[in-house]
Image (tube, rainbow, N blue to C red; front, top):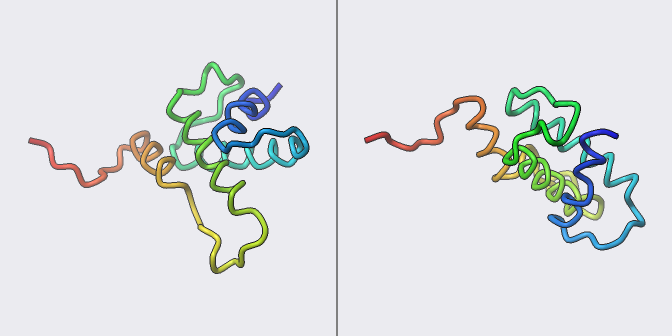
Length: 104
């Protein structure tokens, strides 16, 4: 079992998908979202979901939701590129990127 298949029901719930008709496609999209998040966070994907921090699990679910919501039906020009806003902010913490906050 892969991390993507372990995260499948959580990701479907996040994206409000309540059917099993597209599980193979959803698993592929989720694996892609996980890879995007892991790369952006400079975090190696673990062998099991239990080893993946909860915030990165959420980031992957949010990224999957973005991909799922924007599949087909929109032009390349209208399709969002990159990570979802939540995934970007979470991944930035792992890379130590400043988000503009000023320390006092």
